[in-house]
Length: 396
View 1 (cartoon, helix red, strand yellow):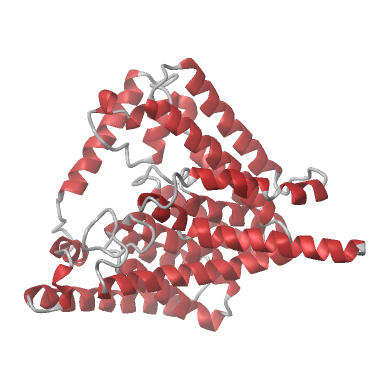
View 2 (spheres, rainbow, N blue to C red):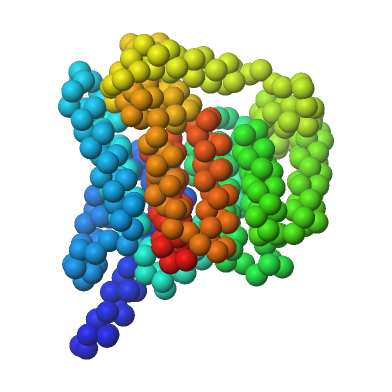
């Protein structure tokens, strides 16, 4: 077998791993199978997945496509290791140490896999398919509320379990793939993703989608008239969902009676302006954020240690901060504050041309959702867009 033939087969092998990673990790299939007790842990999949890349790494003689991503992952692991080593051990600290170590490894592996130009192209098409599948799953779950289950009853989540993670992941998929479409097809793609986001009934997701559409206009990815059309159409769609949903809930004989009326109130609160729904979720988010800030103020230099914001004995809450900046500030101290901004910088700072426009949208959206989520750098469905953005920036 000739060298060229061998190289081609390795490229196909690399593409298979990359596309497989999209449909396992970006779709959140790994987490879904774990919750349904078909896998022990989604972290357990990362190790064999990484081992499969070793022949490719040997072929490249240890060369890594992005020095900035490599340096960030190494630094993130060092900070994680030191925090784990010098603070009291607990179940929560061990779990956080394992999760964040594997997150560093996963970002390294996926960035390496996506680096080849052909594989990068295949990966973007796979992301389009995976994002479209997420939209379809949400629509199917609205028709069949018990189809996938989830952490919040009555809201479409597909395989993502959490409606906010579902909405955010679909939007990220849209950001990194919209440039793959001809300009005349970008509006339909944006609207399709927007429809999937609306079905999650995530207030943050819906507002995030509208914000991204505005950013796409400001960076001239689409024209003003078309971006305005997107917002108007989505507003009409929101109104349609509210009105039709109210009829569904009012009709006890309808199959849609299983839908949660709180989800519709969420949409109404967005349309109603000042009439914001103060549900238990909103109150909890406010309280855990305040606790995270108190922990940082009490120990601003070194923090409380890795995993401390998940420890009920420290916070008296069963969830963490719902804020990436507060999580790292409370656990790592002042050194934790720049972790996320540096991750964003590592993946977009070399971007040029149209990729730079997408990089700006990506960066602003990540910073925005990080104010309301503490899972951005721990869930693989978020890390895959980071990896793809990094190689797109390098190739630009």
